[in-house]
Length: 131
Image (cartoon, rainbow, N blue to C red; front, side, top):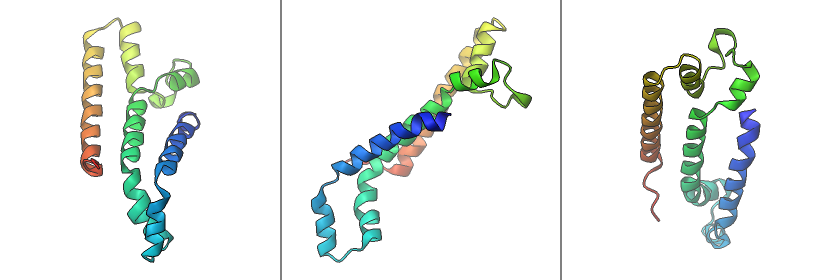
């Protein structure tokens, strides 16, 4: 369900980025004798790196915020062997069922720290992207 919800959003972002690539770059690659694969590797892919960084970062953040689909599908029981248990549901369960505040606050802080670390790792993989 989450894929059907988010994939069109990411495809629209990629479509806008693809339409933003100047046609003159492809014409120059044609004049240089580049085939379709070379144009993809040397023109399209580098120009889509900032968009790919954004899409992956937003996807990771969205994954760590997953609550409603999992909660609705399992009706609050979290399935066999907690198959639908997510970090946000764990926080929800600790606050509203167990009436705890310290433990979910710590889990929420760790969730933010993990998101920041993953985003920094991703930034290292995709580079600085300043053009």
